[in-house]
Image (cartoon, rainbow, N blue to C red; front, side, top):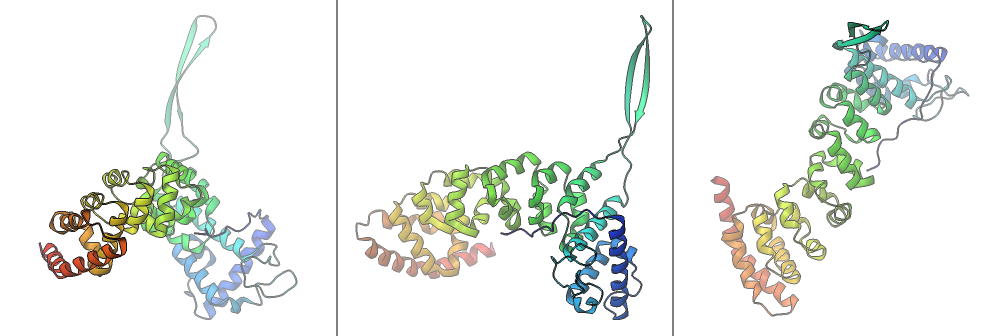
Length: 367
């Protein structure tokens, strides 16, 4: 996954800031006159509330042509892209970044709790034999939220981050944000942030070491898979990721006890099992392991082709191993046919029991 690209960093002078704010106020008035944003919204009201700012940015992107006379390049031409420098010297992308950062500061400052004072006892020596002990109250100037905000501001630039601001503030700590760095932009929903928030910075560091450059993909797809990722070496992570592609996230999110069963497989056999590793119960996997690689491949293909949509729920159920799979495995164990002939036989056998499997699944569901 390609992460959203942050705009180039910008140092804005007081004069430029004044120009930008005046320009924004004029654009806001145009949009209010057209009924595109609430008529009661002011510049301050927009930057103070994430919802207001997101609504304004959304309206602007859909109706940028209305501001063509106001949003112009240094040669006076209308600008609608995020990269071209405007007459004020910075781009629309950088202006959005400044707005989002300003709003982030407002959110973090809202209901800010002053840091608890720290009591220190200091003893000093006076003259040769006398000492003086004093109790001093020191109030920290930097709070936990201050540290979080300082780290987060490095990666705030996008309108979709605005509704996530309260979640960043509540769910993540400074250590987690520092470990995530720029990869924090891979967390693009409240659910993904809260899922990741369960893991401390040390766990995130281990996951980064295993996944390497793929860490952002892990965050974007399934942060809950982090505990499963750190079970494996970097080599085995790469193997499963390559063999399963995007289904690997489901595999890595499985329970650790299942990985004990998978660890017994060699790479060629694991590749034959394929996406079955993402959902098969450990009991079913252990039954399949009684077969050599060719016969396992034959049976898996027969189960998928003959059971269809019932294959996954059947293999997910541990009881399938003793009720059906064990007999199928034993019927293959003693076969001496060529692989193609075995495939035909196994497919016919599974097709014959497919109605029984369907009835069995219905009863399991009802129970």
